[in-house]
Amino acid sequence: MTVVEGATAKAGRKNRRAIPAQCGVHGGPRGFTNVVVERKENGDIILDPHVTGQCVIIFDEAAAATLFDVLGTWRGDA
Image (cartoon, rainbow, N blue to C red; front, side, top):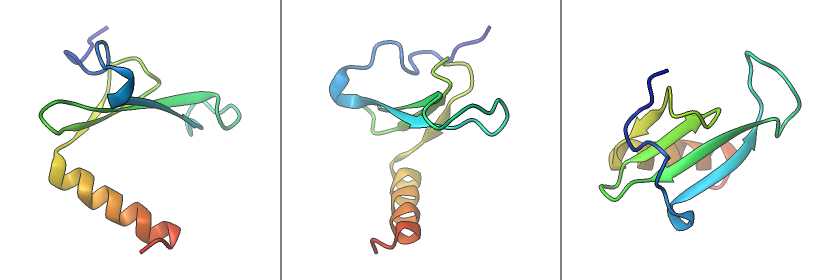
């Protein structure tokens, strides 16, 4: 099992959140799967589906801002 170095192992509570979600592959009810979201000191945002550290999605600050804007638009916030 390969784990991305420092992906979520040492994150403090103020920089890490678990969000209840649903896995499209494995199924289960909403909240069955958690996604960990972490902000690194260098500004990167890491999404860790299944909270395993094996396959993480890493956004730099610009990409994270784009995602934020898109989600706000889809929610009707913008």
